[in-house]
Length: 117
Image (tube, rainbow, N blue to C red):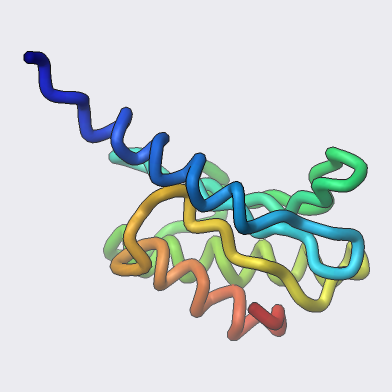
């Protein structure tokens, strides 16, 4: 019997999370994707299916000593962009990842930037 990959297990966890978490117009969903090198985050209104704000560590102006520091900077930038789009509070969709390390740092950076999670 073949063991499922780590990514397949994460996708399954994310599907279960998405049954409970949905972004509305009042509280859009802050979706996080973490790869080995980069971290990506978007604020999504699921009722209209539109991305209201996005940020990632691939942007050249976001640099730091460690990936955790970069994730915090991405959270701050995303919060600024979301505020400009008129969003003040969001629902965190951690994407099947543990609330630890870079995901936690991004969420804390978003809080520092003024988003209510």
